[in-house]
Length: 419
Image: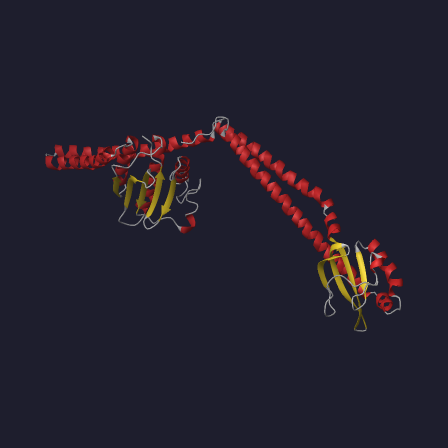
């Protein structure tokens, strides 16, 4: 069994895991908020440039000035006023063929516009790298009496849009810190609750305690069933003897001995048998007969003993058999459970537990080993812990567990114990 370091208590592990999860959540949330702020800033820039460009294009003085001999004389001061008060980085007014008559840099006046000019008069918003660098800009046609007389392009640079994010960053930081603080508070509460329940025990010790409980439970149920079965047969045999029906009494006692001896012989024939698992199988055989389920156990003489401790071995085998018995008993006839111990190709031991039950639904196959998940009703029979515990024990031992269908079978492969 795997063991946690003594200093790594279950409470500390819970605190670290919850804190780490909250930290990741806070970082992801902060990133998402920044991305959303960037998207919002860009959308606002597009709306602003579009609104200003449409307003400029609709101004009668703009169309009139474009027809003047020197449009820049009146339009450049107008554009500069807009750039100072409208919150945009440039207002470029140009002729129909794209020659600038206004620009933030007066030296650029008279040069061709750098950007997309629609083939037909239409409004276009785009991101383009011009003389001021990359910018979000909107170009709008200027028309007079239905004729195209020029264009207006209004834009905000990407750098300006990015600077708009700075005032929003403190809000992002506050929200992320609030989530982080709340999460750490929850982690502290979870640690206190775990410590109240488990003290400073390592997580591995708690897992071992659960395994021990499951082992005692399943072994106790098996022995109870075996004792109950033997008791019934003994009472029947005594009653037959009192009635003078000696032959029938001998047959009952002989059959009981024969069934038990067959399984004992298989267990004893193994070169490295596990007496605890053998006792479990004897009890589970009686439990199967008690529930009307046909039982068959095949134990190969050369099947090696696994590296599991007796407690873990009983937990693994017992829980798998319990699930198989439950499935078979509630399934259609004929009802049966098959158990096989055989050598694995890797040199370890392979344990196969199959049953005649209805199987595991496809939607449950991925969750069947999750802690707390169970297809059984809530209550003593719906613990949702058995298969999760089995997988934890098998994985810690360096093995693996697989589920197959038609018939339903759990196959556990474990490393063999070195001699």
